[in-house]
Length: 215
View: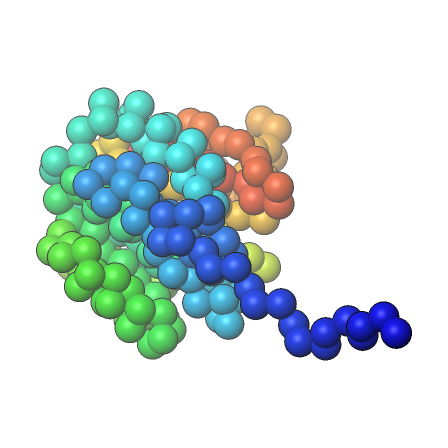
């Protein structure tokens, strides 16, 4: 009689630390921690910026900053996996402040910071809007702000106007959304009217943009 096929499930293949990227991690693209994997808390439905998108975005930023990160002060208002903030820190940003409202997320970010000995990174648990408002009131200013909020919650249109008060002159905002932010002349919504889109692209369902405030 032929043998019955085994009902035991096959063991999943082990993924080497520097092996292919899988759903539960992303990777730092450049700088001193290049190729370091960052774990992603999949249970929380985090949507980290894909490596390819991040590579393009940082090429844009490098071009605008002449690849000079030494004095850059960076704010990441919806840190999530920390992919954007740790990428900036890896490239030598003077300071990176990461904000997230979820305690589990900030705990993991602290663990990554410790592992990397990332002394230029500060992690805070808090509501992005409240943090942005109080930082603006204190006169805090940044060279680069990352906005990668959860989609469909109108968070981009609430936080982007606050960024005009948080940017140093010539500062940049990198924003991701589920919709394109490019509009015909005179058709941009009020919250976007004061911003110039320097670069924009799309990857899958993600629209990503580099913005400058029209001061």
